[in-house]
Image (spheres, rainbow, N blue to C red):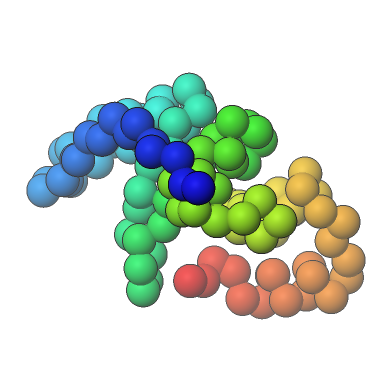
Length: 103
């Protein structure tokens, strides 16, 4: 049985470059507090949260109705950042350095 999720939704449309920094800071604050944000990708919208926050991960699983044994994706800014979450090897670094940044 699926639970009803109480969501507090805020839609922010950025229409000018001047808005970008302030709205990005707003999204970062939501993430720091364990909240979720939706963001566009090259094909679909993504639902994101702080990968180091167990409650944020639980919220993603609940919002998506996804089983918790189905791993979530972690987005990183630099290939070396993977060391916080995995055990990268030489092949990983060769591929990451050749292909990143990329969709």
